[in-house]
Structures are given as structure tokens and as C-alpha cells.
Image (tube, rainbow, N blue to C red; front, side, top):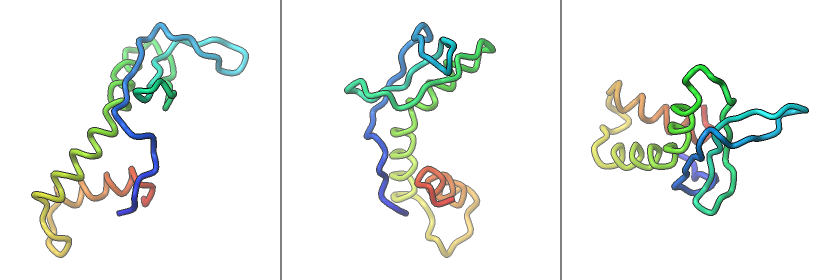
Length: 100
């Protein structure tokens, strides 16, 4: 798997009262930022209850990636063996690395 080049974690999210411009309109959504305040992403500002859970998931991405990689390195079966869980973990890491 390739080396990552994304903004190092941890990331955090700011509450949904942040206002950001999208085209000519203002929207309210969650901002996902690095610990030094650099904006990584923003949620859509939807009011259907998915905005904050999406922000939490995005903010957890660096830790989730590292945890999955470490678990696979320590406990994962070899690539020659067919293990659906390990295959799923490898596919998720590859997707995060832009390989799929």
C-alpha cells in the first residue's frame, strides 16, 4: 500500500453553527479541521440529522485508518489466505490511499 499524503490527524469538527459560503448563498454545516485549524472538509449543512454524524466520521478518519492498518499488520492473515474480513480491511485501506 502506498504512503499517505493527507493532512495528519487528529482532526476535529466544529459545531454546526459555522457558516460558510457556497456559491452566492450561505449554508450552515460542520467544518472538519486539523489541530492547527486548517480546514479539511465541510459537511453539506443538511437538516436531516446526518450532518453531525457525517462530521464525526470524517473527523475520525485518520485514527480509523491507523487503527485498521495496525490491526491488519498485527493480526491480519497473509495475502495468500482468503479471509473476508482481512480482504475487506485491505480494500478499505486501498480506497483511502486512492488505489481503488
